[in-house]
Image (cartoon, rainbow, N blue to C red; front, side, top):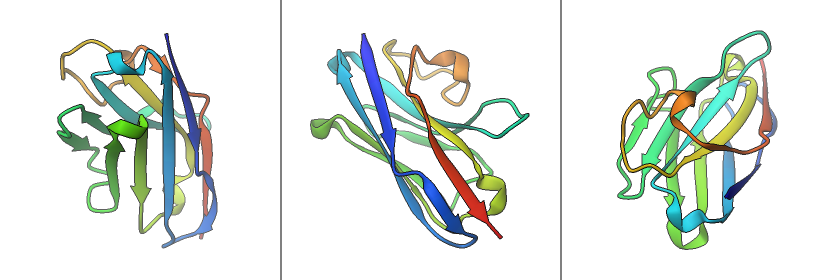
Amino acid sequence: QVQLLESGGGSVQSGGSLRLSCVASGDSYDIRSMGWFRQAPGKEREGVAAIKNDNTTIHADSVKGRFTIFQDIEKNTLYLQMNSLKPEDTAMYYCAARLNPWWSFPLLPGSYEYWGQGTQVTISS
């Protein structure tokens, strides 16, 4: 079992920055890749960014150049640096972990086995 705990959400104005963190515990040594997802009210959960243990990353087109996913494996912590935030970035943000070794569909929620409870990000114009 893997437990994930997100933090770092909050309310900022458009153009501002936030850094989200996600600490993994339990069988975290089994994690092969992790991702950040978000879900706005009335919308489906969408992939934001994902990262493998070798630090290969992928970012959704909507956040490229503004968000950066990175990790500190020794601290079992995943991060999402979010810059140039826009009102449309407002959502609940979730981190997710995958134990299987494949890098298939890394931005699809169904690819991940474990999820955190989420942290709210609200961007005002």
